[in-house]
Each structure stands twice: as structure tokens, then as C-alpha cells.
Length: 122
Image (cartoon, rainbow, N blue to C red):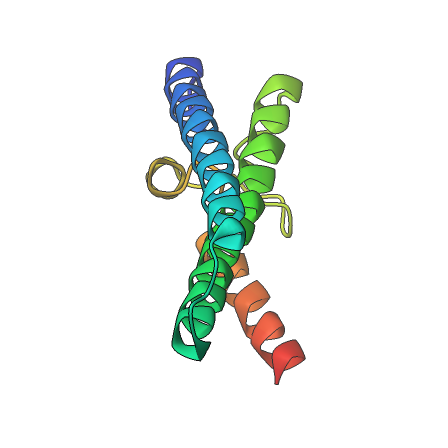
């Protein structure tokens, strides 16, 4: 189980990442708005604008998902349940939390979860 100092350090990392993501999402929204405001001179320009808007949207969606996970991890820190696997209840190793501070699962359960997601998407 991570000690209080380790948890505090991880919380700082999570809060900084949250701030970065919020700035990135706002930047992506601004970029999408600017792309929408541009006029396409021909079909190639139109296709490029659509492609760029799509990429910006995908990046923003990915970051929104990460933001949600970060917010959940911060709540767990605040309520004292941080660092416990959501699937099996064991303590998530500190090395895993340092690599991914918003990890919900231990390594073994993450593999099970990812296999299940792969099956669902097939």
C-alpha cells in the first residue's frame, strides 16, 4: 500500500495532468471552431478541413476519457480508497501507480478487463 507521502505525490501529478488536459481540450475546441470557420476553396480543402476536425475531435474525446479517470482517482484519494484494484480488491503496486496514477486495476485484472473489452468489440 502506498504511504501518505507517495499518495500526496501521485495526487500532485494527477492534478497537474488534469490541468494540462483541460487546457488541451479547450485548445482543441478552439481549433475545431477555427477549422469550421474556414472556407473550403475546393473539395480537397473541404476533405482536409473535415479530416483535421475529426482528428481534433478524437484527441479531445481521448483526453476527456483520461480526465474522467483522473477525476475518479482524485476522488478515491480523497475518500481513502485509492490504490485498491476495482476488480479484485488487492493493493495496486506503487510501481504501477507511478506509471499510471489513475490505474483502476492491478496488472492481472487489467489483462482480464482488456481481454473482455476485446471480446466485446469483436
